[in-house]
Length: 590
Image 1 (tube, rainbow, N blue to C red):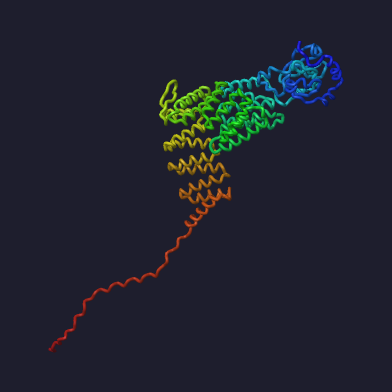
Image 2: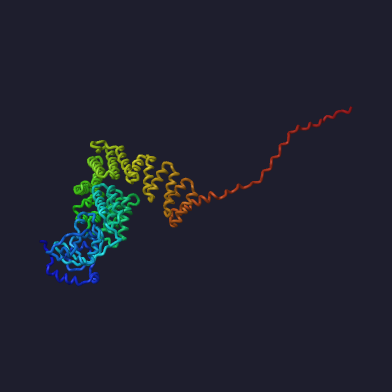
């Protein structure tokens, strides 16, 4: 016989009093209670009148005359779930409230015959006993709830499959199931939770851009649902911080890490009993080189969740960034012991080995060899991890410079640039727009002064981050260096056109135009810059110089001073023979 916490004799006056209360009076006296709280602390609600919302499962056949007055024929037995129960979790679905009853002569009994599985209902009831941790309640009124969404067997299956596949690393298949579940009319709380878990799976898959879109949707869903609890809000903020950390690159690195710190801090404040937000906060702080704070936060996470592999993963990454490679490797080995098939753990320990090997130079051959082997394990567990290919390629380049051997298939091979390039190209085959692969290839060719080969990768980076001026400038600089000045101007002009309120890019463009002798074009660019930011001193200085040159070029040149025309020289007179001298001897007259 099951033990009851309420003597049966005490039920008689309680039931008599309950029978004297009309449904209208009952509604006014019933306190709102979550079904989860009632099931967790049933002794606290004995003899209380409650209002709650639940989800109908089915009719049951659980009666026990030894602990209650609920008997077959006079009562109907109901099985209920909480209205915010995550029914995709088998352990939750398998523990409904099985001790709710409706009198066959009550109005609520008429409603019972119309209920379908997963129908939400508002209930007013009395808690008459608590036995072995179960409340025994009598339902007085029951009203179906419509327009709030509802589970189906299919939607529950889809979410459960998505979570199982994500745990196994089949992320693309998992995302298909998440999408199928979200295409159904889920209750609001479930839609928010499933959307957040979908974003979490996308983070695990390395699909950060998709994850950012999905977690933003989860945040908006939570904001629209006043019943969203702090734990759910904390989970959303923590996932959002993870996405920001993993996408903190280039000129947006600092801003994204700072935003990640803000969101993770909010998550900790909302749900301080959970360990993960502390670990997420720690890795964000480590990215900002705030290592002491980062370690403290991660230590809190480890204390709260000592058997959580992800927490130790964050701790290992923090130690690796701090240059404490031995401690990082120890922490990550423990993480791998806890979850040996999680590709992230293997990639993190590969990074730690690679960093320790690079620091040791020619003596780091064993660590570099182990690092590349761990990257290969990562790729066996998650073949779509493009970053792992890139990191392996970089480790191979370090080994090449020290003339070391690296694993290749089941054998050893001398490290070479060709092997590294194979890894970089494999990453591009997975994600042609991937930042790490394009960066690695651009850096490789620029280091060898192979600028023409580097240009397509810089162009891909600029296209992949269209809001990054640094990307556009890097491409324009390279184009200018190789004498492609026209395309360089086009690159900056296109960026300026797409960012109408950005003044500094117009100054950069003007400088290029000046170098090409296009003062008129430079004048227009500088005037646009000053129109956007009238206090931009560099633009004002350059514009003054350009205007001075244009003014000088436009001024009329002075005419030469006119001198009186020289008189034409008189023509020389022809020379004449001198007249013969008159004879002094007079001739005689004849």
